[in-house]
Length: 210
Image (cartoon, rainbow, N blue to C red; front, side):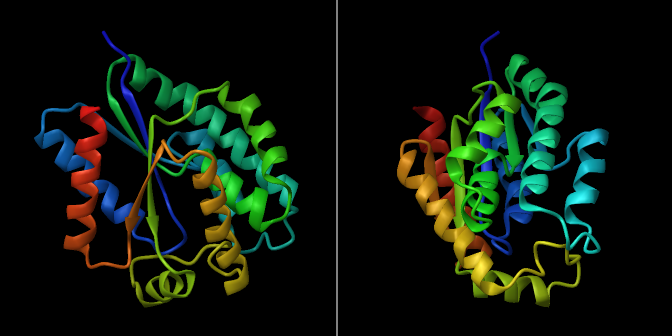
């Protein structure tokens, strides 16, 4: 059995990743692919417990390095329990966030250094990188406004950061993209849902066929 395909979904807060990933999974399944959908941090009980610590609004004193290490720990457990087994079964793995989030959020926006955060994560992932990353791009102010208007979305610790932080996150993402252009597909997430889905489906099938 051939190895599956590892596709990660990235973007600033409010880009609509969680909504879109459900439609992507349905689209791929309709086209005959075996799909596993998961998320970071989380996806398995241990990683979900770490997620609660990271995103807890009461943990405002959390040090940036602590945050980066917790993400890497959750990532490791998730990989060994979910991602690697699914890839070995030949599945397409759709993962809401992965290492690029750490590089953008902790490496760049927190100022820890993207190289330093990458080294931490290399220990966790052992060179397992995504085959394709879909980056849903939106201006931070618009994304945060979406979150405030959403009745179903619970505010977490990262949502409470100032706009400047979220602007740095987006800038960090584009630095990552500039270094790995062949891996990324950029989707305009400011469109309506139909437009986002159409663009995503077209780019997804194009890359999978390659």
